[in-house]
Image 1: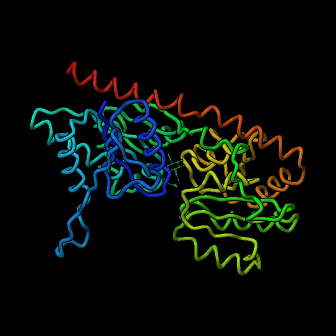
Image 2: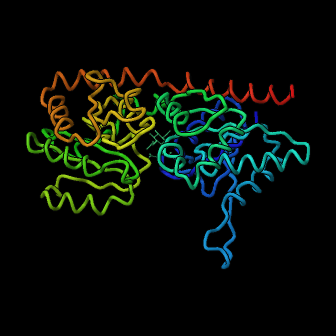
Image 3: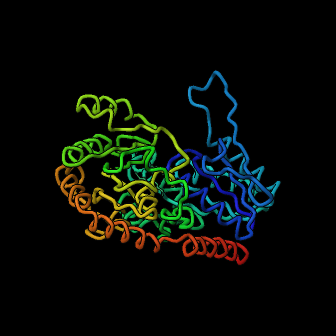
Length: 379
Ligand code: GMT
């Protein structure tokens, strides 16, 4: 099949999922066309089956806001015609589902029919999409998609609660390439470079937006390091970084916190991590937690959104109410303070992650593409 994938090319979870999906689909023989404004960060190799088409928005001084949706829908029309793309799979509703719908309508004028599959990821529904300024357009584009998927049951429930939806939503959970996270087989797992033997390594990965509650990450770590030698690895860039650095300085723990910035080597950092922190305000799934678990790292998280579908209470880690730093700290110290217990949580985390194997999940997307294509042939 020839599949066009539209996503944000950044370090955000939706872009990561879209890229990993495209890569796997290409290995399964499909021809994949990424259509976005930059080459997706995890897309390193382009080849016969993987193409990238850049959407450029010409600057014009009259516009305070450059019309990206317009440029994207025009590019989609051109790429569908040029490469005979059969299905468009858009990740993150805003503005991708809307732009794809416009492209579809333009193509119908030329007797070309291309079905749209929309995957909802999280903040496109819970934070941004439900804002009154966007809501009518988001509702419209979800209802007009030929197939809609959500990355967790919780996100599906939120979508049905927040929008007036008359379309079916299928839950296809996020997935992981387990081969990439075979932590104990890494030859270059360089723990010694980051911490002393007796220090526990705690990690948080995100785009450091307010929704990630980075201040809680630091507060929990502060409590942990009072009880045992420990280091905190903070991976990612975002608007909360400066505040986080200030908080570390105020607590006098700057020398124990490493700010990595953006990194494509998540697997290498997770391979020497003992505990992962994800205290988010809202989280539709928590791909970062799954990546940690696949590396055999237990997770201390909030119990919001789709996280309970990934992190199992008392098995792969612990979940607390949003903002309950004391409970998170207590649970973290409980796991870390006993080597046998820590090892048990690590084993459980890896075992639970096997349920999200990409080889089981990607065929579900293929089935959706086939169904939407069959439907369009029939109509
Ligand atoms: O939260 C992020 O880091 C980015 C955001 C996105 O859409 O790019 O992530 C959302 O999608 C991820 C992939 O499906 C989910 O794992 C995240 O839980 C979700 N983020 C939120 O709901 C806050």
